[in-house]
Amino acid sequence: MTRMMKRALINFFFRLFVFIFIFGLYLTKKEMLFEFMTHEFTFGISEYGISPLHALWFVFMVMMIQHIFPNKELSMAYKKGKIEEFEEVPGYSRLELLEFVQNMNVKAWIVMLSWLIFNAVFAVLYLFKIIDVADMLMLTVFFYLSDYLCILFFCPFQTAIMHNRCCINCRIYDWGHFMMFTPMLFIKNFFSWSLFFTSLIVLIRWEVNYAKHPERFWYGSNQRLQCSQCKEKLCVIKNKLKKE
Image (cartoon, rainbow, N blue to C red; front, side):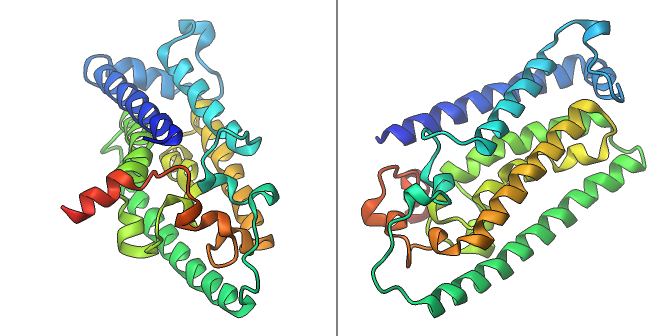
């Protein structure tokens, strides 16, 4: 098992723990979640002191800040956008690169529209008060867990739309934060909006880099993205499940 796979599994079980813990609060102390999420632009510390939800916010923010100010411990799936990780394939075709970029951009737009339509359902339910802020928070925490379910076990976007080889070659890899915090857009609250708009910064940063340096994101132009050079092997479990 590679070092990155061990880290991914640790992250997965940590997120599973967070999900179970927040779900426990949802079942037993939903009113606390509701009160916390209905503070418009205060953080509730003066009223309640530091709560598990403040810790959750801190975990979420640190996670995103690591992608705004990246470090070498991140996966190649993210680091491929850095010049240090670009190892040019000699004589690669610029035309094939352009075709790849156009194809991936179309697929990325399909993913984005699908995701927004999917979340619009919950937005409508929320606006019509069929579900409340606690439900939207629980949905966000579920998306937080699902991010690693997609990395390790099964990704519907990879399978149905993108058809990329693996996460390291994923065109939309750093969309994860934007996707997990989409429900937070609809809640007028410091907790929610700070998370959503930070995730938007991560998304914009990724897209700008992709637009400026597409050659870093294609295995046909960047040797570091080819399977023969992969040191992470995050696709092992997913590939085994596909064969079964």
